[in-house]
Length: 481
Image (cartoon, rainbow, N blue to C red; front, side, top):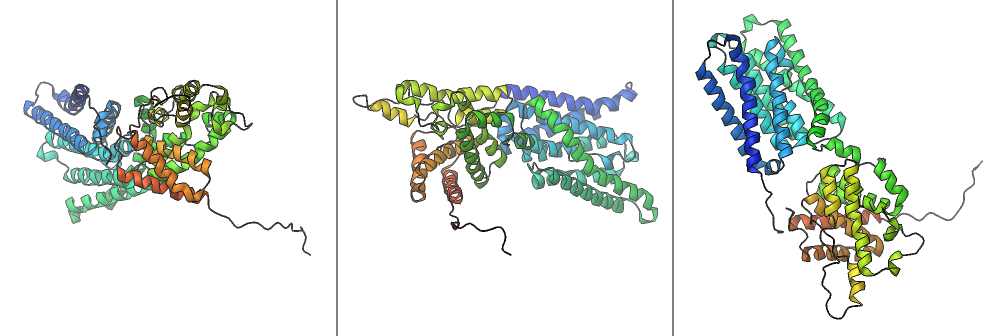
């Protein structure tokens, strides 16, 4: 197994984010309940609320640390989680001001948004904490005489089921029709929960069919409300916290974007190489459980830096002239290496996601440029050190960059060879070289996953190189009558 490394967590920043969340939730919870009667403050209830808030937020932090640690390693995602929870909680706090507020409230909003921006695990538990915080507020600040037990049951029962559904059933889908279906599903579940709470807590002799119909209708509408709020919040939070959702990846993973059109015009060979690498990368990402749409987006833009001086790259040398023939190996290495740094500058200029920027600069790692190293070796007595003939790195920091590193090299080598019988040997050699140069030591990919990637690349390549029936060299007339 390739060595795994642990990401770093800025605990000082996490502490202040926790305190921010604690203060914000405490104020939202306590102030509306003490301001109407500021002269008769119940300090016991305030203390209970503060302790409950602290415990629930601590539980959230502990859950994220053990189940989804990468969220804590990126403070922007942690901050986005807190803000999303506060928005969801604030909407729930408005529900009691209307008779049917709880039935139309978007209980699953927090889970929907965070499943797209952060992760499904964080989305689910954050939604759970929001529901429990609001439930604690209602119980703590109301007397027994005013308890609406059926509505509290509905809040807990429906809220938790919706959180599970949105986080683990829908996940990171980026097709809008899926979300419309999820809105209908959430609405249906809410309606069933509303019916259950009414049947359990309202005496049969006191049933009002009109009241029940209102509850069912508003409960069903809550599913659509959740989806509508999600579509409004996700783009805003994406921009504010510089987080990329699958919707953003779907937008940029298109050959019709401005950068891709420029790549086609200036470096058509690189453009076609990138499209083919995207097919390999997407298949490999699916095979090891990574985001297919993120892998495709990274592959599309990994070589955009070749738009500057495209003639120095073999796939764009259509005239048969290679400018490297008149250059020293060291100069050639410098020219080739610049495509990564220039690509990163282009990505930043055009606002590509940080994850795509990382893939651009990491997909060559610190590998030597073998062709020019061997060329230089011919003019050197003894062993030539690799220093000065390697990419500047960094090495791949995540599985998507590792996939891209392998797929990029394999696509070029397989295209150059054009020999199906030697494909397996070529792929094995490329992976072995990168393992020998310790290229995967800074990401958490395993040898099992690398083997799956190798198999997937071969399967995809064989699919691309499939044989077709040879068309007969006969011209048919247009009229058989």
